[in-house]
Image 1: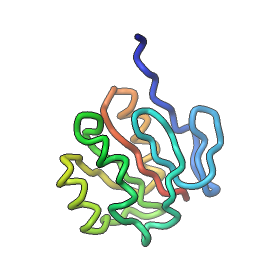
Image 2 (image 1 turned 90 degrees about the vertical axis):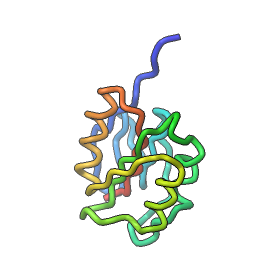
Image 3 (image 1 turned 180 degrees about the vertical axis):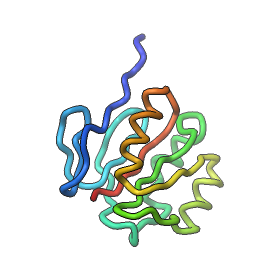
Length: 120
């Protein structure tokens, strides 16, 4: 069985992303190399429930979550940090433009990560 190719984030802005050539409106979650809509519209509404799929996948599938916090880097809420830590999943956070670029580098290296990116 051939290794699965992770998607690439080709562009971001205007309220969405271009992922592997396809425009996706809204925030984005990439988990198990599958991009999907992520129902977070703003950093202020971020909660542990938004990471349920990542937590369910656990550390066997996800080494860490790369969180794009929007236009400005911000410390995620304590409840989010604690939920991920309890699940054995790491957390790296930065503004969304930086996270989108970093995702491509880390995915190309074969890292087991999830990307949770708030649209800008």
